[in-house]
Each structure stands twice: as C-alpha cells, then as structure tokens.
Image (tube, rainbow, N blue to C red; front, top):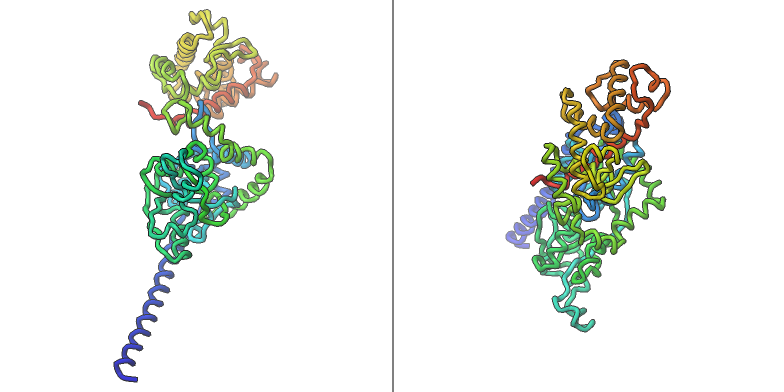
Length: 485
C-alpha cells in the first residue's frame, strides 16, 4: 500500500469517527436541552390543582374542539373537559391557544395544567411532556383537491389525476404546520420511500380545517390531516379527496407536564373508564361522524367560526344593553339563560318572552306584548337596570351586577333578606360569592327563613345561585368568541 493510499484511509477513518462523535454530541446536547426544559418546568401536581379548585385547560378554537353555536359553547374537547372537571370537583377554566407551537411552553411554565387538544403521541414529543391515556385512534391521510370539473369526468379519468400512493409525493410539495405530528410523519415518510418530499411550513395559528380549505381553494396543493378531522371537514366540500393513508393507526391524547404524575394518573384512570361509556361514544360521534349536524352548524349565521354573532337578536340586545351601559354579551347570556332566544318561550310560573318577564312586572314596565322581542328586551333590560340601581352602594361592579341578576331572578326582597342574614352571620352583605350567595341557599331552611330579620320567607336559593353561575360561565365563553365592535 502506498503512503498516499494509507494517508487517505486514515483521513477517511478520522472523518467517520469525527462525524460519529458530532452525532453523539448532538444527541447529548438535545437530551440536555430537553432535560433542562423538564427540570425547569413548574412543580405543580394534583394537590396544587385541587387546592386551587380550578382545572385550567388549553384548547384550540376549531370546528370540532371548542366553538360557539346558537349561543351555546360546544366541541368534543369542551364536553369531555366538562365531564372531567365535574369528576374532579373542579371549576373549569378554558384558555384558547393562539399559537400551537408554544403550547408545551405554556404548559411547562404552569399557565395551564392540561393541553386539551388531541395530539398524536410521538417519542419526540414525549421528551418534553407526557401524554394521557389515548382518547381515540386515527391515522393520517393526504388531503388533495379533485379537478374543478371532476363531476363531469369519468371515474377512470378522475382516478388518473389523483395521487393514490405516497410514493407519488416524491419531489412534490406538501403544506403543513411546522411543529405538528404531520411534519414528523412526512420526514419519516421521505426516509421510508427513499425520496424527498418538499415540506412547506404554514403558520401554527392555522387550524386543520383552515388548511384543508386552502387545499380546496387551490392556495396549496396538498396537506395532511387526521382521518377523523379530514372526514368531517371534507363532508361539506366534495372537491376534496382524503382516501390516501399516510400513516398506520395512531393514538390521540391530551398532554400534561412530566412532573404532574399524580394528576396524569387520575386522568388516565378516568379516561379508561369514560372510553367504555355510551355517552363518550355519543359525544365523539356528534363531532367527528355526524355530517348532517356539522353541515348545519357551519352554514349557520350563528356559528362563531363563521360570524361574530350569537343570535338573531344581537342588534336589539346591543341597543338596549348600551342604554343601561352593560356589556351586550352579558345580556345575551342572560337572554339565553331565560329563553334560549325563543320569544315564544313560557315558564311554569307564567313568565314569557325572550327575558321571561312576569305579566304583573310587564304591566309596570309598559310591555304590551311579551312575545315581541323588542318589547321584551326593552322592558327586561329596564327591569335589570332598576335592580342594578338598588345596589349602588356596592363597591365592586361585579358583585353589583350579580346581586342585580339575583334580584331579577328571585326578587329583590329575597336578596335583601339574604343580605340581612349575611350580616347576622358575620358575612359581608356587599359581596356575592360565599356571602350573600350562601345566605340565599340558607333561606331554603326553616331555621333561617323564620328568623326575625327575614321579611319574605322561603326562597329556593339554588335557582338564583345556579342562574348567576351559568350566566357568567356562558358570558366567559362569549367573551372568548365574540369581539366587541
């Protein structure tokens, strides 16, 4: 062997060793990075969450996860979260994610305790976070557009113009969110098929439905979607083809911090039980399989992903809410609570109309026709404003409106009784939560409503308490979805 050949072999060997060392160093550095992320994440587990009494969940605003339809919050994640919060005896607080790329960061720093967004379980992601038990199984599919004139084509001609095998994606471009499981899958697929698939990365603020719409209108050529999401979103758009699988079955789950071991264990046990229930399957089918219901929602004017509207009476509600200087979304939530926006609604007690005004009260307010939406809203908001004026000495504006709403529901006299009873029991008559609220509940019992300070006797206190709780829960949803103009 010549000296030159020997030198060349040594040089090659050194380069190979150097490359291997660099790769090892790279992996070690990545491990150090992820170890650091986990180590620096907040120490917060089940006991801390239970002590706070709040389940803070990060969700995605989308056509299947969380949205508003005809004044009601809906979505697969939302309904399952409500059941989980009830199981844990926690108040549910929903935070909408505005950046899918930042979700793990938001979770690890403790802003939320759960990412309630169906994510594919991957080893790469498990380095930063841990997944719950899977919620459902699905697979990834290619989303492509049929030719514009596909309805006039023969089946054979149409088939010849569509991709039928992932191999056909070599040297073509697929558009997906950068840090999605779709991105990981395309990288693996390129390696599996021994060719390059060009990946066009999209904004992390785009939902799968929005990206599929981009395929339908020709903005992008291809994308990837989970099959259940692809099926429901393509049901309203016949120009999309979603027949080509890109992956095997994959587990879709929610996400917790690695340090939240006890919290995750409780959720896992709960999910295992829930998955076996008929109610769980009904909820899943409602959002991922019921195509007729999906089409009806997305074509409605009162679907929050389409319009900034709650009901057909929004303009009237805005007018009368403005007259009394209140957020129209709060009044809309009250109207939903009273009648679900049905002007012909009647209660067992004789109240009727959008705001369920009693006939005697209607006379005092000058309402001639309770079924007239304009009259009902004018009179109802005027009555709420009157109740509001009775609490002008209450320092906190939120307490003041809650006391006014309670008076609207069960009568000012009963709220006065609860305030007096609060003073007798060393509570604050100017504060609703845990003070006047508790005394209204106490007025269900003879030992309380028979006291000398009580002038109006028995009241079913759970009604105004639930009334206010539900109005404000819905109002919080409305504030998430509906912007003030």
